[in-house]
Length: 255
Image (cartoon, rainbow, N blue to C red):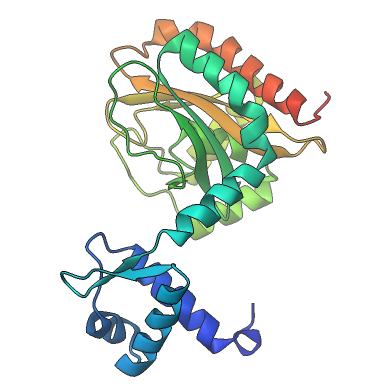
């Protein structure tokens, strides 16, 4: 949106929300004013308005401001409105029961993937993923599964904007190698993350298509290298492809 078409007060409020939400301990008025380079009275008025609606709350003990619980209500309604999440539930639960591993469902948004569902499985596994969190596309199996079905020009644009930052020693870091990887993903019907995003974690994912045939999401299984061995990944290939097809069919996709 062009700057002249923006409502400055709304833009300021959203900038403050973004800034406060990035701090785990909260921020004071002076800190916000200094970081945004605006006067404290403007910050205070904006915070007071956001607090009145529940989007910002002030901690009584410290006087610092944190993100408010109203965002939980908004985010839950957003998640509930995503048909793919509702239609995928049975398939996700089946995968969790069959594998006992972490199951993810993600959607693509502005060059990243966003986790919209996570089932923790029954085995111990610590991962950075959680519902609502974003993740890069170049080093995650879900990201690859989605990018493989986007136009190459769009993929190249994403790589030019986002780059291929190193997450582990296994991360693919060259555009040429990554595009070759996507070609294999599209041909095979599934994508792998072999410790490319988190050390010690392997993932396998498949794309999900909507009724128009466009890639709408990706579903994955994640586990530690100790359990997600090469031997175990082989039978999971067909299982994940089928899971992607099952969810796609629920969305009205017909091959």
